[in-house]
Image (cartoon, rainbow over all chains, first blue to last red; front, side, top):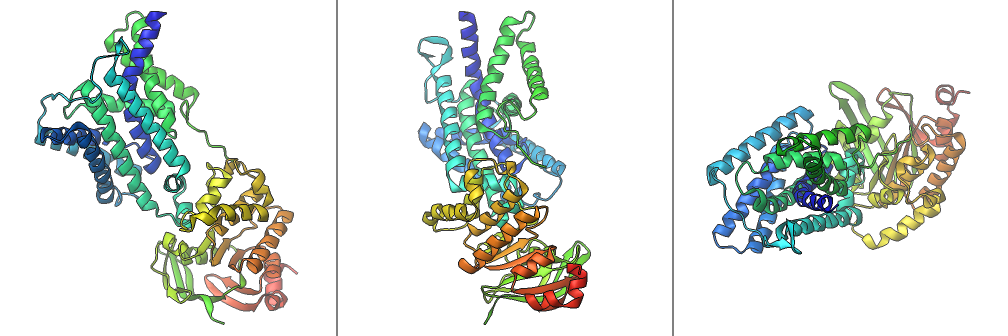
Length: 292
Length: 237
């Protein structure tokens, strides 16, 4: 039983990485109805920006705030320059745009900061959390930050007018324009927010996976998986999906004989497929009731 | 009396296809006007052209200002509410959120709460369902919600696109009674596009008849209702 509890705890600790990324994925999905393949690279680039700021002597939280602000602005700029012109293009055109953006950001980061692995600091320290060897204070801090972001997003979308306008613009653009919402700017705002959340995810993840241009490759796949598992329409689902993927992954590795580190990832992904076959909207996604 | 809305030589296009061929009409402030016509005559296109939702040329003036080049959301922000065909309900949001959205472009946020209460007085059925997902409402209830959402803008002009479509006759009567009341009591100028000519002519004070993208008849609603051609073509007696 103790083994089980420990594995769940360790799973939650890894899951926090996925949850963080999944939150950013869901955010952009809400705004533009697509998955942004370049999301992970945008987060990686932001993390490098914060690293660079710290190299120049800016203290951690100063760099954190500046990076979030930079990422928000950069997200809006990317949308205005690249994706606003593609707004009416077919989905595949957008996908090509995402992939191009992915490759460009990856190479530019490599060009500026090269591909060697860099240490990235954590503001929470890395001693055992509450005496447990399975979860460090950094991982506990990361879980805390993820839950805090989730809470803020919930309040933003549920109780603010801008949040309501963003939801309206995402669900029915034409009706949204007919109540006077500038839907184009709502999309840009969504990009900005997703980029800002991604930058926080990047800065939380970097101490665990180390900083390098390809740091987000695996994380983004798991972030997607977590978002899909939890339900792409639900930020809460995305975070829960992240934790669940982490827990699955650990339990499968522990309890199913013959499953080493190599196999536990595909098995966790297979479990996700099973869940989606049974519940296509994801575990926490809201199936929309429609009268016909 | 000066016209609130003045439309001159309006031509609208869907791709290469021209849907309106130089349409001109005007609405007096405080009037309730109906635009009649058969399927495909251009009624919906006319409303969509006013809100710049379809490519068009010609002059559209609202309260003396040209609005032809404004984006849809900026036309709406002038106080022109548009209840589209199919109602445009935000089905995955609650009834109350739909009403909030109607007022989203207003800056006098303090008055929104009392306006929602006023909508519940006009449409008591919405009050019973205010936490419900709007998509679960019946067709009639969704139409009421669409009208209420449009009124939340505190519009000067309200455009309605076939509000009777798909509704039971009793519900249509109820809806039209409320529209008349809104027009009188809240001083909202209304332009309603209808296929239900009989009901629309009873309600309206002015009427235009449109055929293949042109106005073919205009005048007092009573005179139009008594016109022999209109009776034969649209009223069926």
